[in-house]
Image (cartoon, rainbow, N blue to C red):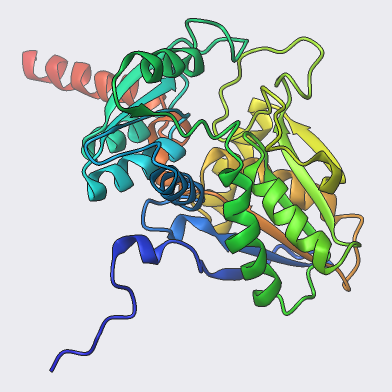
Length: 327
């Protein structure tokens, strides 16, 4: 007789991701929560599941309905995976800064993808958020989780990610660092950890030209970061510090993590690591720092890791071969 499996469905595999110590020759202990181990490949699996389950329970999303969401990729991917499992139509709007790997992953799950201009303002009618809202209003039976405004977003992390970190560190965590966008992770985890120990420092990493961190907001290339709108999902009372990072530093750090440290992580995770390592310089051997590695670098190969000069090199080789053939 076959033993009963531990997980009865793919959705039960979301969460309980491993935590690993990283060796960077620094004084404090640096631990990484490996969120790319979720079945959909990112930390957004947690929030997507919570938001869809809450919508189903409230009758906002019914069998045969349509899920519409604005996402730079990972939230959309998680919703597309869940939609495929549950039989929902899924439409995801993305800004044109989104890596092609993410767009193709969305399509692989059967989602419909609408690529929108990468605008300076989240409320620009051409932008991915406004277009998603229009779709949700126009399509019968459509439901938009709207991660920026949905309280199930931080609740997912208060209920799962925060307790996991506290348990995995045996209550020794002193600092928590993560990327901020919709602010679900920092708000949910931050609130839980502060309830266990008010002295835990909660630090967010934001895009330098976001509406929050810049007096003159501008479009940016980094994905998974950027506080472009402040809503009730952002619990600012539990946040000790928000540190900005430029596109250049984020991209450079992401490449370095893979080339020098064996961490093939996404751009937001590269940004978090850059900030965390700088921050750790002022800490002691008694500190325990936990960072969130939100997704894998496999989602960004064409955007971050592939040398754009390769194409010209191949063309040059082809030219030389043709020249030799003509001799």
